[in-house]
Length: 140
Image (tube, rainbow, N blue to C red):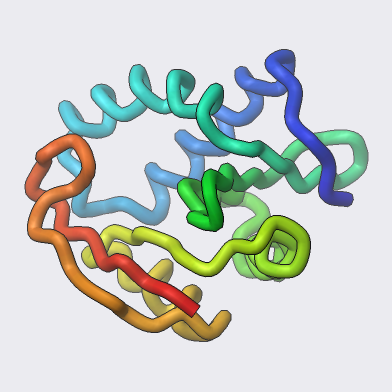
């Protein structure tokens, strides 16, 4: 079930984020992982957050702002089961998502978004925080 996120869900979102990033962002330096872990909760206030709940437990979420998918994370125990696809399709059909930025080094994510129908529009050598993690700007 897809539902809106409340502030009381933030601790669970962080568990999902950590599980997902630890298992998909093997290129991330530990110091940068810790930096983003501190920063991520601040981003929650600036996006529309929706979560995917199974048996009463949040196992995935996405954040959207102005048609851009800002974040999509699925707990590693539940990846590969179509949850990300269901979330992004909900975002496309109900929240007008047409763009996503993705780490170029996260090959699984790049492939996933290409499978959904996104294509690379441009590339930035640095991420939004000025760190050397190239970003692919993708659109439908």
